[in-house]
Image (cartoon, rainbow, N blue to C red; front, side):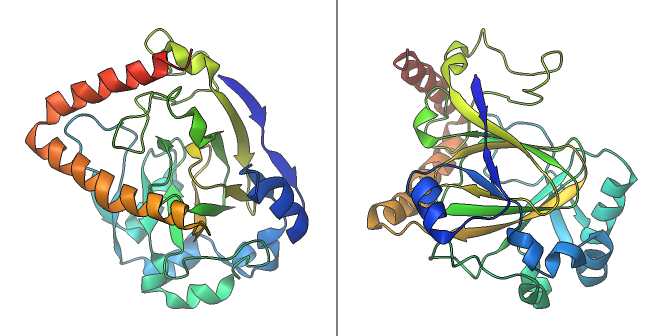
Length: 291
């Protein structure tokens, strides 16, 4: 892989953001955006525990999906309070994603503001919390609805690996899914990396970016950007989603959600191994064309 650093700014004007990043679909980290929010200093484990500690949440481990894995199937369940106690105690490779904490504690909406000076189209019903213990991994994928994402990190650090959507076949994308066949775990550590370049040789040609997010950093991920995240410390982040302004972009997201995903779910249930085998052959054929 050929990796470059993500641009980092303390702050940025709406005009510069639109010209250099939004219209060119280029990721950016903005350090000061969340510092204006009360959430910046107010949100922590103890505060969340008092608000939603008794709420049952779905947990996910670091194991990649296989031919039989349904989409977004939880690996365990705990109360949010039990989960917080577990990940505070030490490294724990368990994460929570797409948890709408605001359904259970709506007052949290008052702790931040939507960055509408940078773009419009935010889906305000669904700000989402993403939580992980140290060593937990969010495997390489792109967001199925193809929204633009403003991902703000709270507590701890997180390493993020990014690729533009056009690199999908070099990443050995699973057909009819938003996932890669490649395991990128510990990609930055040659001694412990799980990337198998003998099995996925075209990956060497992929052009990507990387960054380590710290408390308060907001990462702008343009629509369709592939991302792999590893929690260096226990922490959580909030994602604010903004729909693409074009009809084409919106329709592509709708197809992914209600067409592509339903087809994949049906075939996983009816012919899981043949379907998986076909995907592998297709992914390798598409990668070969990238040479």
